[in-house]
Image 1 (cartoon, rainbow, N blue to C red):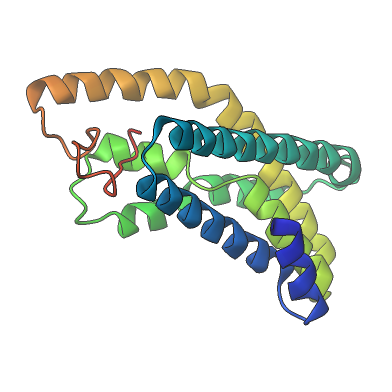
Image 2 (cartoon, helix red, strand yellow):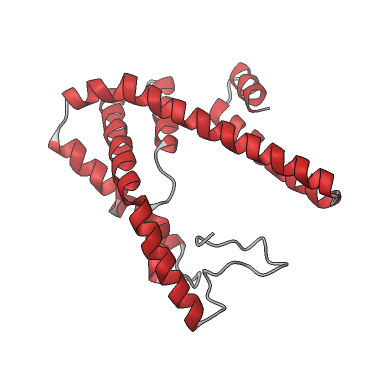
Length: 203
């Protein structure tokens, strides 16, 4: 479905990346509706198996993408490192990304630890590679410099987020347990039955 949507979009001079994303979104909606319409155990197992297969396939393709990224793009980029590129990459992973996330969550009722956790582990890595490919495809001015910035940012993201994932997840989990003990209905809690549409960063 994703490959077909991508091919059709490119053939009609559209964005293949957006088409593939919309196809995946539509697939997820159809899968959930199918599961809701047929609540038998067999249908539920089939739906879960399909979702698991799609998830594993996505992880495999993402890993292959990072492998190609490291083998093809990162090496030449490291040869032309500049302190300004490194500085901007660090800012991209912190202030430039975390501040908009905090602003977008203002009024949501989430506690500062949840906002910080969401900002630090928000969209990253593969999305930047996709945006970089779009720049290359459109041949925008300064694409080589932009490519180096993206490559360094993605490399730092893999390094820093990978190194901090276990430690910060444990810290956030410990904070959440204490917060849930103080107030069973904290905004970051797991939704009760009937509130599945209101999932939280804690999940």
